Image (cartoon, rainbow, N blue to C red; front, top):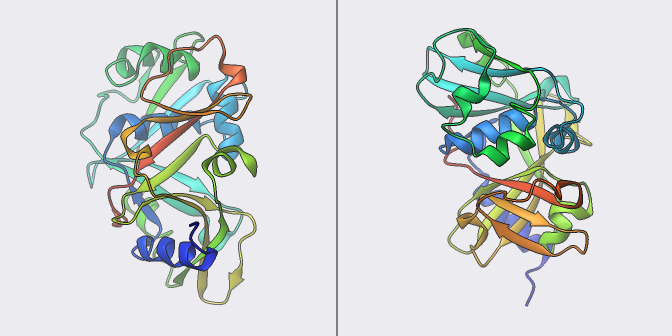
Length: 255
């Protein structure tokens, strides 16, 4: 029996209850894939274009906070009062210099050759910048004195609709749960504006099988056939496939 919408919303909000504006990612490889595939901008669609080698910038930026010993990225919203949600991972620096003209030599330790090809790294001349961030850039944007109100914008009944039916997603976040894992994405459109309150909306899907947590990617072909894979092997057929990165969240702690 399919759970009622209100039941799914309550379960999702319970799992997300500690969300404060930041997502900690323990898997550095997935953080890299999330960071580099979104560098072309434009949200999920921009991430897919970047993975196809279209619309991406020539510079690959990795932002590092030496005060806390972590790399971070951010999701951007149109609402200035809740304009940034920080994604971060605790990691020692992978570069000693500010610039490198050979990012492949640095990233091949973490990403496969196929993943590097999809990101357009190595096939075109790119530079990678290692940006040192200051403390206030991470914290003050979140701690603006407003309260957070969490809402569920869209509840999806099946995985196909969640991944590609409403708006194709290049990544989804996952939090493990006892009664099923929560797959979610931050829904920045529309954002409800309330005085002294930042409203954050989510799109959600509950994986009752807990199967997806074991895999790196959700793939979908032109016939809407879903598969779970840990490695991208076929880059020649990339135009006919949707690759959605599964990004497990290890905590909602502020960095």
